Length: 347
Image (cartoon, rainbow, N blue to C red; front, side, top):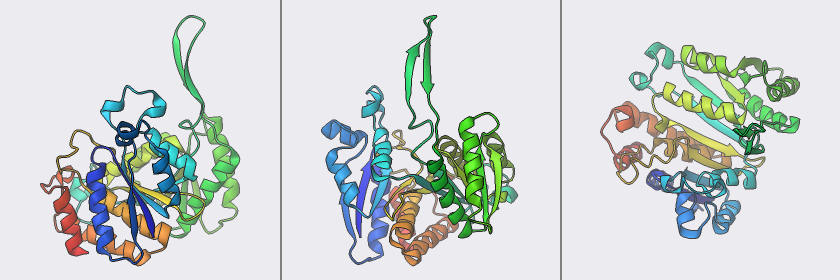
């Protein structure tokens, strides 16, 4: 069980350390953890956010536990050298095209959600986000118009095979849950989205047991706060998925609770909390490590098929929350290590 541990920047090393403690507490045979720098920390050490040595370790691993990247000291660098390029590079080099972001309200956190308790208590959804296409990976630049004005431009594009493979992931995920899939697009104004919708409908013929619906992204954003309980699995593109998954995090109480998995065609995956590096609290021991711990649970489930061990971790987190183990993000007073201790006690 080779796991590459890439802590990254800001609170990344703190929360990753606690997730490793949880993994080690399981006493898994053959567990082999190898740490490597990434992001701003790697740039400061070697001049690149994704050094060749780090990439080699990631490629050789069965799974990757990732912290966070982002360092204000690097904001002035050219785009190719900024910390965020590390995660984009890993997605491209490892073929990580499918991002799974579950959002479920833990019992006892109804008061932490921005929504009314009777609305938030129904949240149990999975956002499946395509990672390797869309406007993030399209051509882009800044040009000067004939009248002298500067214009920034970014190209949004999807090929049908890219849509087809993420659609299959969405349908298969729905079969493992409640057999409902909502495809989110903006087909009324974007040709990219029209192709997306057409291909998803084509793929649906392979999954007659799954109820397929379509929703424009602006309506989906509204429905996530109006009636989130209606959603089972949502499948969408890179840009829309980025925004909707962050919105879902506040619906369940805190971005510090949401884990994610970025998967390839095989079993290799990269697992990370969806929160950022939070440089304002880095090194203070205040960050909530639960999202990273839950990411470790997803790692065990999706890359190693260890459903029992993954469920144990998730149950320990749920029990810790129910018993009042909360950090500042949830109105509590526990620090990073104390929250992890509470999880380990219940594990």
